[in-house]
Length: 118
Image (tube, rainbow, N blue to C red; front, side, top):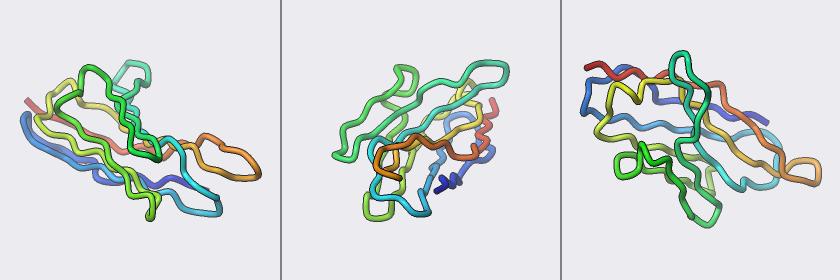
């Protein structure tokens, strides 16, 4: 089982990026999926999460600028990031609870770099 994230890159302040993260391998279903980020020199922090039913939760710093969504048929979670700011610069990690071996287990993706220039 693995999570493969993509879509990071370099963008100017005010620009947009869309991150994707697909779960693959042998598992039953995906429960909560989400995105976290780790800015340079700081701890990893929550960005947004989404339940299988579509209930979302956002960090205050991104609410209104970022939108999390998912495609349950593809076991994929997305993060649309608009109005990007330099302080959004970080390595972004996807996270998911996947059903495997009779219970939900938590998995992390490999991280994708997002750099916002001023």
